[in-house]
Image (cartoon, rainbow, N blue to C red; front, top):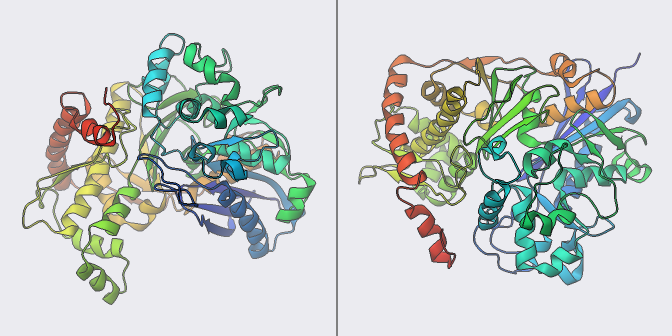
Length: 549
């Protein structure tokens, strides 16, 4: 029999990455990346319409252009015949929400709505619906087990973003036939019909297969627009299951064979777990990138305070999938290098043929833990876990006239490691087993200093997956199960995922130093994050004429 192949697409915050792999052993034949021309719209729409603070939008045409570029490029690079591609899977950031009309066209593409911010896709990191999240949290306590979501409705979830649209632009809300998750919208374009991903519905939209939507006045106002088009019977599929086949028109545009299986979409970090080779319980998968995600499987469902998801079958069937995260990691380092590094450092980096991140790392790696006298809180884009508060902000403590850019750079990395340790401790305090740790993502592959800091702070060995595109690989693995090549996702993982090739082990002296620094981190964490001093929220919201509760 001829070999079969699958395609995985990973829609991230700034770009889409794609892989074409052999379904027998996961061998990578081709990869391609498409950077979104419009990036993230923080300050203004393309026509100059200004955006309020804490908004984060995207242009949906970027998603389509990525699809039309990457799939033909993968086929061309690999030389694989289209009829040998058994399936296509994709993952997206979540909750990334699109308001669409009856023809599934985003409202922002209509001339009358082009200048209306609520008509544009709200990216996962859109935190402007934080007040709606607080109100939905209060209401949901009457009808929903919020412990599955860390005790609160997150500002990154779908319902707060839809409720914000209803309140601030009811005309957009009324003209929308539904609010799509990005992944569901893309698979509907591929197949020509609608099937919703059970993973995003249960993890980001608060929907339950048993009871549907939560009860309450606020949910009733938005329920008809939340996830299913009016008059359409809801059809739900889970990652690893088929949602249909590529339509003849899309097959022509992409160069695929009509009838190629399309897999139910997954969330990006969730796809990274099978893409890293995890197929069973007890292995913590750390996806380190723009933001950090921490995924874990368990046969039991335990309630972990502050963890943003503990939902059965959300990652692999038969397991509760636990999810936690940090809303900013690589983003924080990117902010620092773009705004706080003097030109002399940039010149020195160029002279040595290094990027600015590599140059700062080459200086910071010479330091011992605690040597700079700095400590930071990792909340540059709020705290997702375990405080679940989008209103928190970053903190850097201990600066003097001797502080240098490399000192701050290392302190910011250490802060994300401390935040990771806080998440791991939350799991362990709730008796969720963590036997080993595996890391993937750009930062895990590129920065050995960062990985050694994480190992020292966590106090455990960390294996690094050799897969450069773990989420895209995970989507390709899901597609192999959906295409019938394997009987289950677990079987596909065990055959296709790469094995780790490098490990970092904690160093005793560094571990002891970081234990002391972590105590200081936790003192600041609780003081600013547990309500004793809400100065961060006051500074962030009162200056924008938004009342702080």
